[in-house]
Amino acid sequence: MSVGEEIRTEQDKPQQSLGTSAARNLATTTKSVPQMQEISSRWLLRMLPWVNVQGGAYRVNRRLTYSVGDGRLTFVKTGDRVEVVPAELSELPALRDYEDEEVFAELARRCEQREFAPGSEIASFGSTNDEVFLLAHGKVEKIGTGPYGDDAELGMLADGAYFGDQALLDPDALWEYTARAVTTCIVLTLSRQHFEQVAERADSLREHLRALRAVPEQSANRYGEKEIDLAAGHHGEADIPRTFVDYEARPREYELSIAQTVLRIHSRVADLYNQPMNQTEQQLRLTVEALKERQEHELINNREFGLLSNCEYDQRIQPHDGVPSPDDLDELLSRRRGTKFLLAHPRAISAIGRELNKRGLVPETIDMSGNRIPTWRGVPIFPCNKIPVTEARTTSIIAMRTGEAEQGVIGLQQAGIPDEIEPSLSVRFMGINEQAVINYLVTAYYSAAVLVPDALGVMENVEIGRWR
Image 1: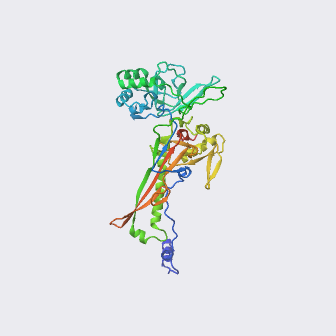
Image 2 (image 1 turned 90 degrees about the vertical axis):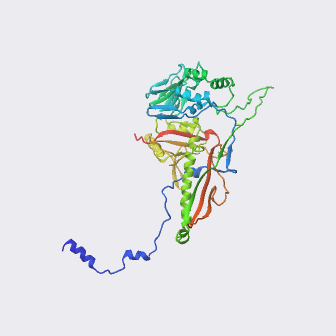
Image 3 (image 1 turned 135 degrees about the horizontal axis):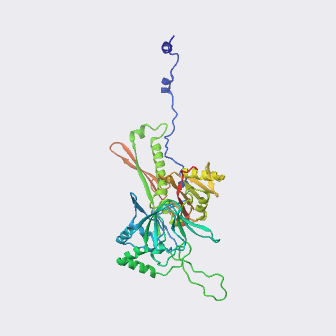
């Protein structure tokens, strides 16, 4: 018998029992609730202390701090030509609080583009400092002389930094360190000669510099805060200094941000298709999950209050070799007291693990809600996929001290809003339209505040794609 005849013979046999396909019509199907790939661990929302805000705003009062223009410069690249955004020159200490856009444009035009190969000296210790360097791209290390005469690294600079700004105000300025290119560097230079030529023709800049030089040097502590005069160790009837604690005249206020959407459900679906699961409940559940994902994304990346944008310049560090080594993590932790936790992209955590493995180190772990979280020096490293990864496969690692009592980073919310289902999150019925569609307004209010600058630190330009 051939194979075809055998198959036909099996098909011709009479059916002796109920088939499974027909039987399933009478069976009850076990269903899962709707699943969603976008849901992440959201450790930032879970670990951040939330402070209830009345009136929709939170004011951070601080001691008076003298601004020195510490910030980042922004550049525009057209082909192989790099230019500094003129208004960004106000980040230079000599130009802080100066606002003449025409003068900024003229200074930007006088900047000269230069390129330095890896290992070359950009400036040498003890030489005359007659130009300011604006670092558009690359990494530069500052090298000084150690206590025993050997070289000592003073810091690492990266994209957007500047150095040598003393040249604009002091004609006798000397380089107090050696600046060496670690990678290929593209810099813009503005010489003191060109700066003075512009000042000679611009009355507003000349008056600004005259007023700046006339201001006496303010007594400040190492954090830039106005010094509180004290006396200690004196004997007899010594004159005790008089002092007071000055506050910032215009403290920063953080207004609550908002994330909203209108959820639409047809009344027929809400009425008829609610067994075994309530359709309205499931639609709201998934919508709230998406809203919380956006909330965490904004807390990391928002330009107004996001952590990456609000980290002070002197609290940003660069990894010495690109990859996140144990030495770099130690440097990040040393910038603040009582670091509560680190936030890193899962790929950055993997890169940290590779570097530890190279040195034969095994990180300790702690249990957090049933999850084993790696730590460094006892500080947990939580994953956060909202931290961006660039096309060059670089990312950032965030370190935080949290809580109002610790002068740290806090989350802001306003509990008790109408139709609230969670603190600062509401679902409000908006009515039914003429097409019998029910509308619900889903709203979340939130923000974050950094109480003092050293509560937040960031390791930037962390390479995550190097395997050797």
